[in-house]
Amino acid sequence: MDLSKLSTEQINPRTATLDQMPLRELLASINREDQSVPLAVAKAIPQIEQVVEAVRLRLKNRGRLFYIGAGTSGRLGCVDASEMPPTYGVPSTLVQGIIAGGPKALLKSQEGAEDDGPAGVRDLKRRKVSSRDAVIGLSASGRARYVQAALEHARRIGAFTTCITCNTNSPLISFAEVAIVVDTGPEVVCGSTRMKAGTAQKLVLNMISTATMVGLGRVKGNRMVDLQIKCQKLQERAERLVMMETGCSAAKAARALKVAKGSVRAAIAWVPRSSRDGGSSAK
Image (cartoon, rainbow, N blue to C red; front, side, top):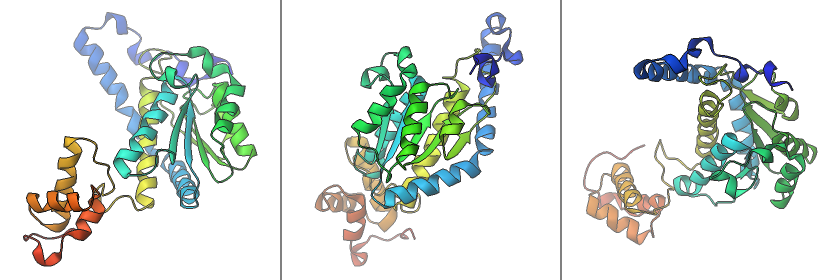
């Protein structure tokens, strides 16, 4: 597809004199544009809901979730996937991020990699993606052949396929069972889809992964009771979670976590109600 046909590639009339703006006005312009992104995401909630329902079903039946993208989109998928084990205590294999060009593309741009369709297929085959899995293709423009070919292969073998894209006429739509289209419009800097389009993709990824993990029982109320304690900050957070859930003291929470070998969920169950120090337990 011709770039001139994509809304993310158009000149934004509100920022056409960006290089002449005083710094305060320039920053305010970026901020005003950014404020439109959540509103655009809100319009896609019905499709996001369909995707979460499908992903939950796949994961409950021993399937996995894959994000696959190129450039900024691929990096965002890898970031979201990497947060699942420490936040929700799931195996690192359950949600996986795949980026065109491989791990080196996380730190250094590998622009040509997005045009390599066969590589997208190979990367899914390498991970033995099957009909039990869900695959989310990430491409702001939808032009990345790497992502198109990967989704085409995933759909052909029976995996659930969806995409997150930011153009209503995105070529990627035709490769997905359910397409999440967030029409963010022209960028502050023409064509720089790491900006509004990237923000939109990040917001949608947050929604999908969070709602999926809630549906898998990885959250109690709004508390991450399956977090993995990997540092002092998370140790303190875990203690606070046990205290909030049981009403026990900090010392007792620390003791419970030690007995439970770092499991917040098990620590909450370990604290006997008769020995709790007062306060109301969360329902």
